[in-house]
Image 1 (cartoon, rainbow, N blue to C red):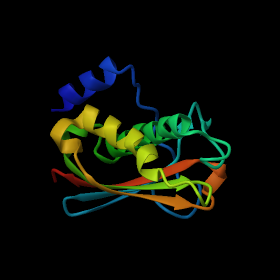
Image 2: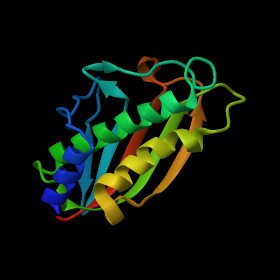
Image 3: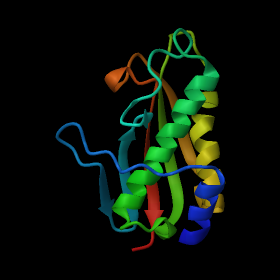
Length: 156
């Protein structure tokens, strides 16, 4: 399965970056039994937050969906690091929790997080079908527009 995942990434022109190091006193992931918990991932691209500001004021839905895609790419990068380079150990993405920095009257957080959900499903196939949350926030770290964490079932 790992080869199929790598081929899908290549077909989409996605090169996974090096997994980001934590910026504070936490770990980027934790494994308990067959569950991998990933810390929240920001839309980091080329070493910096690529999409900043509040959705509905500074950022439109399309740009916010791109931010969610970048978060998903970083989720895959962290998972790959946590799993010794083998994304084929992913049995299933159990849940994505999506946080969208948005204006109080913005109510399309679900459309924003679709950017991540669609990418994860495209890359992982059935293993990428997941439960999720999509919630609005007043602000996120580093003025990021989107942050997403993940809970993943893995092969031990």
